[in-house]
Image (tube, each protein chain N blue to C red):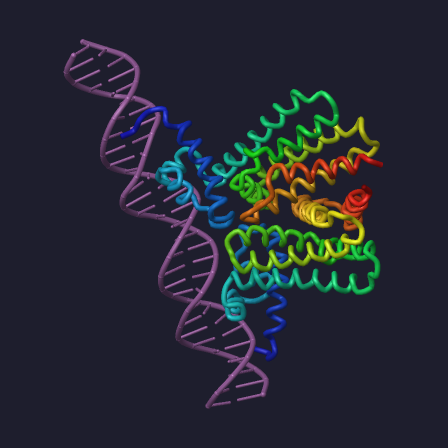
Length: 190
Length: 190
DNA sequence: CGGTGTTAATTGACTCGTCAATCAATAAAA
DNA sequence: TTTTATTGATTGACGAGTCAATTAACACCG
């Protein structure tokens, strides 16, 4: 009994189910059938809307990336000093919405996917470049070596994500934010 | 024409081929047939010696972990001050042997595998606990909050690994070591 | 309003490929 | 002749992607 106008609802459901399924079963055993079942539809329908499994994974990635981007822009919009800009960026990385365990697990999958899929690698590269650029821009007035500091900050954030993805009981958003901000503060103090 | 005493040679070849294959094709498309071909034998022989694909992946992981452990112990043996101990630990993490691009790519696979395989998770947990314990031990004489500093150092190392796994042209061993040691130094300065 | 053709939604059944794992057979060493 | 090494062929499962068929909403027309 087809109701019309289902496409956007189905797409959203599949994107969310993809993220949940990655978290539930791990990046390797992801199948279209499992995702579709979790989203309450047949795998044929999933293929109908997305065309392929890779496109489904990419849609999930874009969703996560875009959620992060919105959060970051929102926070940066009201930040008017270098320090508050840094706090805004780091805060967005660990905002509860972006630091949920299923979203974090999905990140790990993106890294793996990037090893073979060009588009995934491209998106990840864009994300990295933006984060780096935002950090350097905020750091420039505060230090004479913003590039190398940004490198360390980026790696630290990635590392906290990875560790979060593995532990059942991970760090809180607040604790992770604290670690990164401390690192920045100490990096500036010299 | 079977020559005798092949088992250890075949096992070593398969372990090395597993690591190379992960680096070459990414964690998702690993197949026993590809690994066996790279190691110069049939997939049937690979199964004969390891029993299953999972056991092959675990053997590769144990190999990487054990190489790291040896390197770390060797370096720690000649370190007699807290600071040199820290340098030894970090140095082992980024020793060229452990920081080669194929080995680093394999690490990413371990994290993914740990999402579903208990033994992989167990090994990773042991590694994490050892690193943490070594760091805390070396940090204790130098700071009054060694635990939280160790947490940040561990995450930073993981993050540098992950980033290394993605880039064709990554950081050098020396550059990565520098970043971590700077982080430690600054963390101690307060 | 009632009929009729068009379009969107939906799925079960199917194809085709791949892959892990097994097995029987062969060949050489001991 | 017993053991070790080795592989081609095979099995059995599973998964991505396709397709034809079904159902309902919609649009147009007389």
